[in-house]
Image (cartoon, rainbow, N blue to C red; front, side, top):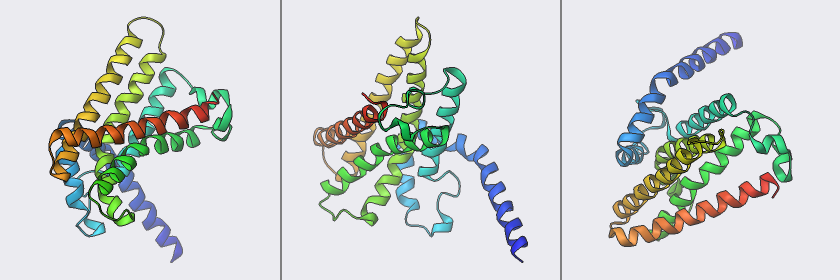
Length: 224
């Protein structure tokens, strides 16, 4: 009986993993072309039964995780091992293989949806708990994944040999920040029902907090 349950579990796992080949590109395309609608879609899905959520896309956290795994794979093939893994300085000594580095990357980029979601909950004057934080965190993961893809691609370009690549990398980084920041302004304005100027203040505060945390933790792991 246990063997049959194992076979059934493997069968479900295989189907789930192979379905990513279809639903990852679909989710990425929608997140890039209709980011705000995807965030609304995520909010709506939170009201469904757990087994009925995100049936035609990847769940937001899984989408972010797979995006960062792909980014790491591309970086390994193009520029080689990351400096954090190579240097083994500071807390970077804890990151001694690709698996732990991917987990670190996920933690880094998850700061953005976490801080954006927490800012929204506080601005609504709602009690900050797991329940109130979950829906905005999930919706933010849908736009953080393309943002992480653009930032990671810019980092790869900046590490290539001197030429036009570093400039293209810097341009892509600026474009990513402008894209992500603009979406946050629209998102805060929509959910708080306020003007875009006030929404920009909320978005800027959350963005600065996330960037400071991101850079500070990165420096600790690099050992500077």
